[in-house]
Length: 523
Image 1 (cartoon, rainbow, N blue to C red):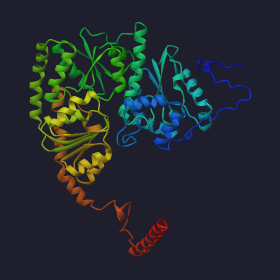
Image 2 (cartoon, one colour; image 1 turned 180 degrees about the horizontal axis):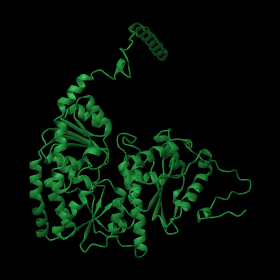
Image 3 (cartoon, rainbow, N blue to C red; image 1 turned 90 degrees about the vertical axis):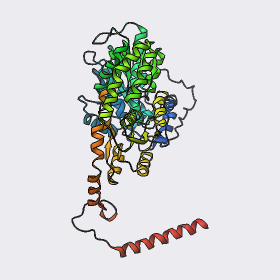
Image 4 (cartoon, one colour; image 1 turned 180 degrees about the vertical axis):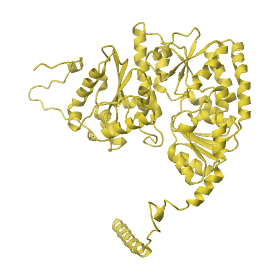
């Protein structure tokens, strides 16, 4: 029987044992089965390091430092990288992980509008341990790599394959002209799904940069701009890049591609920009690739009056634009922004938290609109590209908490008792239980224009409407007071059948057991 080989992965050298030499035992500090990731983050990380993934995890620890909590408090991080791949044209995605994880990620991706299939390579403990899983992944990639359909295939290891050391780096870099991009996105190494977007964006930029260095590459579909461009780093509301382009025009500049991109050739165009605007400041791997290409990075964003003035000046200086042109751009938009802020004032105290990475920008806009924002929590880390926003917010008396946990955000909300709490789903739920008006950050706040005059007036209506609903929240709280807690938890057709006598007898038994345990400890 002849073995069919697709690439050179089978040529990887194996250790040759001398005759009679016992086979070395591979030490694994924590066993990991192939069926689930229930072992816990510490156990999974220990297994991943034992399997040879220490360098990968060390890089992730440097790029995405952990916070006080040891696990993501957003959705599975891999959703972020999956979303980036599914939004790109002519890019196929394959997941390698536990079936339950893949099901959940696929479901959420379609819930958020994905209109294509997600590939999956199933496995069990035997195929994981013997290396058959890698062979199955390799076969799947070869089967999928059709240049008439795809520019790239993204293969993503989830927790269990990463912990077991499934070596995606041994996959060929291209098959039939189709690029193969392998990444590991374990929940025990990537704190948030926002940062997982950076994992894939950075890997694609690294691949594209190598292609550029090797020779000519395809031009953007719409052609190259006749003006210097500014690449935009971070997912934004669709209207924001157009507004940014309008604000850059008086300086003789143009808005470049948005990274994460929508098609592969946009990566070349982004790397062709001499200046990169880190609108979302947590894209550490992407920034590293831009800096390796010699590009300048500018933090913050043109939100509100002060933010727009500072950002236009920083971009102009990065491109050595004449100060008169910078002033012209500022004068063209700052009066309109100030007018929009004045026309849509926000009155009230607001606590703000989220895991998208734009929390500091939204807080700036709320404060310039007239709101009091004493607390901002973001699940993302502090980086050099968020320094300007942090300094501005702290000067306004705002406490900013990076790597904030749900407990941090809830404690701040309960201590401040704001007129409006903006945050994640569990925080919004907690706020409604306390009759505090609340808004879900991702769907109701970040999904709005934030830049320039359009952004200046975009939050007033929805925020003021929510604050005005406090009386309604109080009425609902009074109506449902006590429901869903203690004896009223669950569904009842009548009054709960309370038996305080049974409870008293049971409590005596518990007290007796506690006294016995305490006495045993003293002995």
